[in-house]
Length: 251
Ligand SMILES: C[S@@+](CC[C@H](N)C(=O)[O-])C[C@H]1O[C@@H](n2cnc3c(N)ncnc32)[C@H](O)[C@@H]1O
Image (cartoon, rainbow, N blue to C red; front, side, top):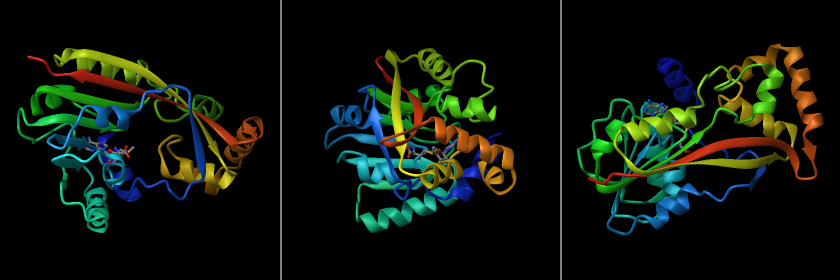
């Protein structure tokens, strides 16, 4: 499973979606970047787990003393280092690390961020300073659920417990205080079928979508049916369902 994921992300090489034309309508006002902004200052030291090509760390993180950003894919970190060079930023270090086998120092970071990537809350707890904060944003079980039901498969389709609940319980078990779990609902509208297909090709929403596009006519019919039933003035609607967790280390 972990090896499949590593292969998947190493093939993708970046997490840049700027070529896809879509607009978001947030139904919930939980904003990871605002929370990060509010809990940091110019002296803060931040860890970003599963950073991919550093796309968000470089563009959306606030100005702080130091950011260490890690990913288990060497290809992603290679892209991130190229992006860092172009940005000219000096306070960010990218390096390879498995989130589930962390080697960062104990009691070091003021904030740990994990956006759409697996975590080990116990290991995060160790690497946070006292009064440090954990911010997680994840893709929940019911993300793109209408599409997945039509295809009868997809990311988390066969999960028993929702990933949000598993994460929430692991964060509580790790000893964090003030743990809050917030559901995040977003309507994402894609301008054209090609934009939606580009998303499905790049992400694991429908895990084997690339093969579908090339070979499976029945599945292509299902995609057309989905588009027919979910096209609005703003575009083709995908109902996204994420979750946010914030938690504090207080000893
Ligand atoms: C969906 S992308 C999210 C990227 C970035 N956090 C963002 O929000 O744009 C997930 C990233 O997590 C990385 N990843 C997945 N499992 C990991 C693990 N066990 N350890 C470290 N990185 C991992 C992948 O290589 C990929 O770059």
